[in-house]
Image 1 (cartoon, helix red, strand yellow):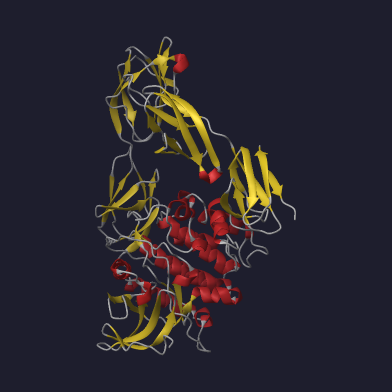
Image 2 (cartoon, rainbow, N blue to C red):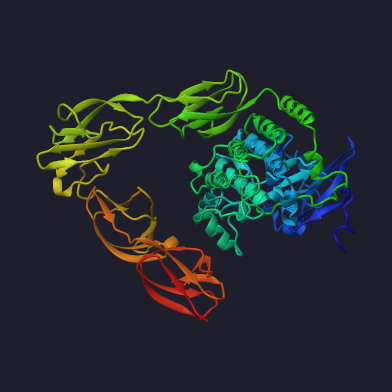
Length: 633
């Protein structure tokens, strides 16, 4: 008996009318609330997908999170959640019933290619407004994709499935796991399992790219290939260019919204869309005005205490037949006057809050609202007149901003903290050069210290010297700096004189992170400017960097209280071409890259064995630089 024939009569208090759709994990039913005669959709987890009570609790917790988010984000561009509960047929979520179909149905069928540019940008603007609204409350969706956008019959988008959403300052429960859909995941979600507001903006950029160009910016025939391209490669060139968009503008805008570094991306979905509209010179004025009106609308409110755990399936209500007189065209032909009235009505509906782009000089200041950090500047934020937020950045005075009204986005200047600091050395009497300027006097020396700037200090006395450096917000404090013979001087902040048993430090000079083990025990990872503490003496260590296929045994000597720098080999890029187009293996490990000769693989110089998964062919080569490797049949 199939599921449509075994239809439950009731789920909770809701009367079930018919099955709307089903997936591997659950089903969606059309239902009616008998109390108020409202039609709604009921999402239910199948009982055979629940292995134990922990599973049941997790599904209920996910539904509860989605309901909490919906309650906070009371927005016409976001599908409303009415109720959550448990039942004999499984945990359920009662939500707004949207007559229409998901955006990915339009994209996969090719319908979006036939739409006019203005229509597609209006859809994108509606999604942007909904996402920015969520972001202004510090909520990260984490699974932005066309399948999570429902299109109503009159062509309006409604964002749905906040089941894996979280507060931006909440932490993941699973290290190294990204949540969401691979083709739309951001580089940081893939690399670190960490999502921020700008991760959503990246995913939204992928969605808009696909909707306008008809192809994904990081296409591939396998998940591994897609993930590699997202992390390492620029978006593909669109040929021919998208009709109505200036090619140079397209390249500039998508290079920014799809930047690998989150800080290099647009601060909001609206700023991205506004730039895109600016490079569409043929867009008619009515469409341009309507899009800009949608993007101006914003809202905000309190932030719910959300936590999250991995759950990757997303269900949506599948296609209802579009009425012949309805469909996407109905929105396309709305008169401008009616659209303008709709914008005004929507603005009034959203209340008295205004969405601002909060910026500071310098940037990257923490934005603290009601005692909770909600992001860093620049960031979109919805505020009511009189509402206050605090901007905080190390090295600068905290600034309280009280919103006084209006729609002008502020750029707030932070004032650097200046303190009096005494520079002390062993021995006394050292000359001081600070930021390439010689200071009058000798240590101990009291000076004015600007905490809002990095500083480089050089102490010298005869043949003794030391060169500590300081980042923004760092001060010397009560530290005493021990000078060393010039030949042994190091340019670090390793400062104190210590006894012979004090630990030293290991750092690297390479461009990649390494994992270090000593006597078979993991000592940790050295990345960027970080370092690991080691007991003094000679050690045999194992170092590895799986990301670039590096493994070696090294001998190091650690001096008490001193850093030791470990030199690492250079990293080059190779491509591998094999007629079978299977996964490339290096030193017996999969690269996740197909052997099509087009995707570069980062690897350290040295001897490596290159093979193809499932094939007998292999080559052992001394890799000395960038090169192409070809296999023949």
